[in-house]
Image (cartoon, rainbow, N blue to C red; front, side, top):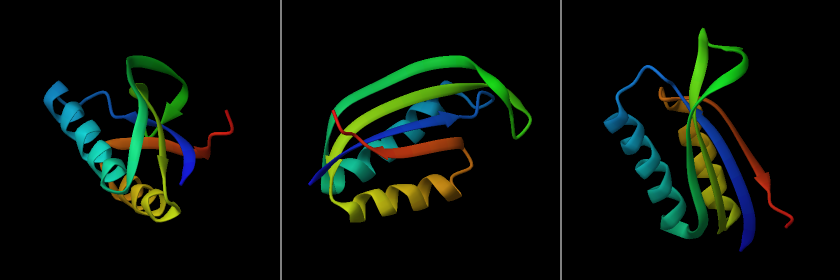
Length: 94
């Protein structure tokens, strides 16, 4: 199992319940084949530049350990999810 870090930004115009549902959906994908070591919903922040006509977004940071297949599935779901406007998955070296 490898260590990973994912940062994703959720659209600011959806309800707080929908934000929580999206966070739980992605946590479930990670927990299905890995283990979450740190999870931090950082809240609504201003973006450095406009993304898909949004100036704000809800930032979420997750550190986890998992097999590469879990990361592939997580990336696939984030790509097609309407709630996520941007994401980045990296290997965590620390």
